[in-house]
Image (cartoon, rainbow over all chains, first blue to last red; front, side):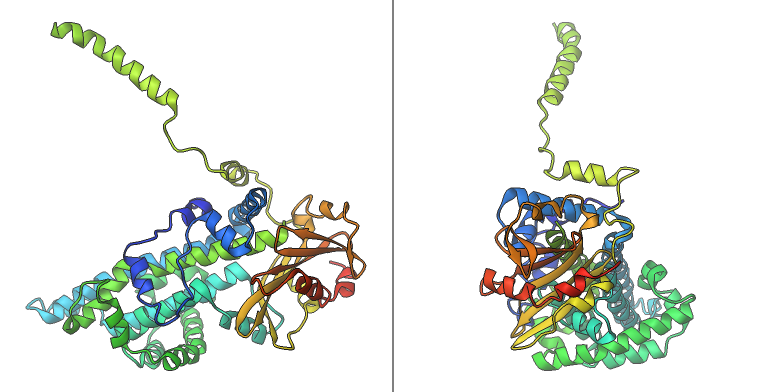
Length: 294
Length: 171
């Protein structure tokens, strides 16, 4: 049993590294994310209601829905939390690799995987996590694939900020401007055993459709391919570059411009944006449903 | 002298501990502590009724967009479906259909209502929602998400839902 949902939302931080790093992306999605924290605050913001008895009713229904495991909300939370904790391990591996390359400890590079391939798998795991969590929370809305994709494309608020952070922190910074093509080609060149040795995959693989890692790799590749266009469009329409993202992170994270590669690993280890914005998304959807149902 | 203090130290400490625990210096329990306890105990009732209608059955009754409005599918769960109403890329309202069998008592508020929309009993919920009840079971809720979407808009949009079709739904 996880922590109570109202405690998770109450305990979301208003400051700190994750929040500052996300705020540094305000230039990408201006006005979309205001870091709404607090369970009752979220009820008031989502519904616009102020009557305390009504707020109590809404909160109780939202908590009831969350606590019923069969409704899928706890699984969504688990996905958001797991992907952030395992990508931290990626950061550690990547940093060890980076230090290995730059110093006399060069033998380290033979012990740890190449960062770009690892980063590509991690990026695709985050894409898959978003897809799976979306389906756990919202079901598969609509009567057609078109309806479902429109629902997915209607992202706003903290969900859109999560995708912006995905593109910037997990795409552009570690893999550069052509991260989408690179990511896809790495995936296509990966074997099931590459996947099996990946910490992020190991964390969430039981929820990935497919009866073996070969089939799961197929699902992951297909999912990535289907959002590649959206990711490229997002970067293109906003003129995003690794440099513009890094410039906005100055003052949030200590790094020097020539140690750009370290930045990716540092972000992986210390910025838990999936968990933070994921909890915000989960709270909103629960409260929207609860408000309508009571 | 020292032995005297030692002899009374333990009872003094005991008194202090009892006093402090009796004072209950911890934070007050959450307003949700009760529901958290009820819904996490071993035989807690499920949140959604076993025979609740699948949300997918409601999709066909939602209106399509038009005249500057887009209607986008948002949620589809057991006993619940919700669509967003957007105007110029901004979310201005939501429309939801709920099977009230999952929430005992949620249909009762309509019994006292004499007001009707398209022949179905209606209530206002809070400051921002308008609801109708169809065939004593399915509730249609339109909620404003932007001040520009007024109560009059909510009533108009409730009528865009295929209420007659919904009333003939056999789950």
